[in-house]
Image (cartoon, rainbow, N blue to C red; front, side):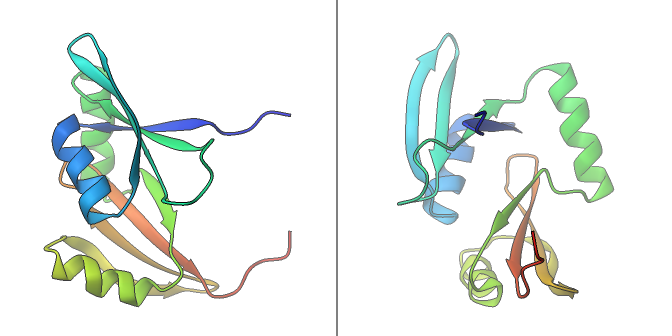
Amino acid sequence: MIKIATTSVFVSDQHKAHTFYTEVLGFETRMNVPVGEHLWLTVGAVGAQHDVSLLLEPGDSEIAKNYTTALYAAGLPVMVFSVDDIHAEYERLTGLGVAFTQEPTAHGPVITAILDDTVGNLLQLAQYVEHPEM
């Protein structure tokens, strides 16, 4: 069986990203290991799947810069995070100064909101109000 272990998001500043993803979004640090001039820096949801992590990957390569810049300019989020109460998260995060490009908006069985992670990416929050049959 193949499982998701780590996925990555390119960030313009690993230290700033670490602060945002832990202190603002509420993730916990999983690994913080120096690798040359950068870090192997992973975070994950507190109390959830310890075998699934998000790598805050240095985005200083030309490919990463082009990728993140194009997605951001198009208004496309690089990742979707699920939440139980999107309106409560929206209020909590805006209270912390987080900038949203889309307020909570219903799209059929899901309510979404899009926020700026301060390190070059848009992230989407999603609350499923109806779970499709699998």
